[in-house]
Every structure is written in C-alpha cells, then in structure tokens.
Length: 276
Image (cartoon, rainbow, N blue to C red; front, top):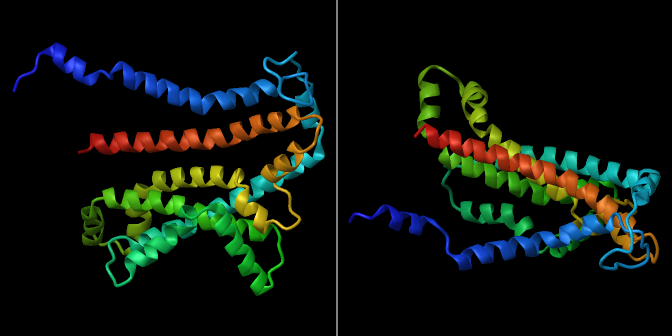
C-alpha cells in the first residue's frame, strides 16, 4: 500500500496529547531539581519561602569552609571509586561465566545476581547488617564498600551481558582459527568489544554508590558519608540552604558520569548499527 508524503509525516509526528504528556513528565521530574538550585542562593536560612526574599552567594562560602563537609565528600568519593572497581571486576566475570553457558540452575544464579538491586534497599541493608553482626565484622569503610558493591555489580553485569549477546560468536571463532589462545582472544577481541559497556556500567555504578543512603545507613557504623551528612543536617533549624548547596554539588558529581555513560552507549549503538 502506498502512502502520501503528508500521511507519512502525520504518522511520524507525535500528537498534541503525547507532546503535552512528555512535557508534563519532564517538568514533574525537573522542577524539584530547579527548586534545589534556587534555594541554594536564598537569604532565608530557616524555611523555604517562594519566591525567596533575596539571593546571596554566602552559603557557597560557608560550604567551602566546612571541613566536615569535605571529609564526607572524600569518604563518599573513596567508597564510590573502590565499589565501582570491585563491581566492574565481579560483574564482568559473572557475565562472562554465565554467557552462552547452559547448566542446571543457571536461571537461579542469574536471579541471585540481580536480587540485590531488585530488592528494596532496606532489605539489603538489614541482611548485610545481620551478616556482619553474625560474622563479628566491625563496621567500617569496607563494610560500606561491600554493601555498595552488591548492587553496583548488577549494573555492570547487565551492561556486559547485553553487549555479549550482541557480539557475534564468529569473531571469537575467527580469532581461535587464526591461532590466538584464550588470553589473546580475551584481550584483543572480547575486551575491546565490551570496553564501552564496562565503562558505561562503571559510570552508572559510581553514580549509584556516591549518593546511596539506605544501605549505607545499615553498614556505616560511625562513618559519615555525604548523603548521611545531608540527612542529619536537614533536621537543624538554621542554615538549611547549606544542604541545598551540597545537593547542587552532588547533582554535578553524579550528573557528569551518567551523561558520559549515556553518550558512550549511544555512540556504541550507532557504530554497531553502521556495520550491519
């Protein structure tokens, strides 16, 4: 059946209802973020008034001079970096072990791998706290890292498995036929094809770890990460804009890796589509 050019254009163009719904959804998601940025500059330090009575940059100066904030930032950065490193190793190895392997119980193992991110964070946190208590493990930075790695690993695993499913097995077979051993095939054929998937998963894992609060609360002990610091600061009656300033910094820190991961994933999809 032949369609006129105008009919095709009408089919490709979204209706007004769909456009309105998309705009409403974007506003619903991003107006609260804009309010956080707005109240980082307010002169009111006790409550949130709209519109703010005045604007100032003094809260940024206060944040820059607060050592407890920088200590919390440093701890969160340390935990996120190490958790991401562990997640990349464990998630990649798990994906490689389960990909194209058929055995009894494979589905159960796959469910167990993705379970930490599928369950509510409070369940994961309680289970980890109980485990550390039974084993007699003292709460420290490493208990937080272990807790974060459990769900960060899932993000990397999902990315790598998806990439392996799109990778042609003929590449591996051709490498073997040309005389490459298992290690050479892994480093020169498999790893370059998985590189962007690992990078994207790692960036998302870093963002998840940096601002995670529920699991951290159950595994931190006396450690204070930046999200925990923010929750404790919100109950104070004065200088509430400080938390908004810190929130702006968190948005910038987590926004950059997410955008970069999305950019890498989109570029990879385009390059793969161009070779078909």
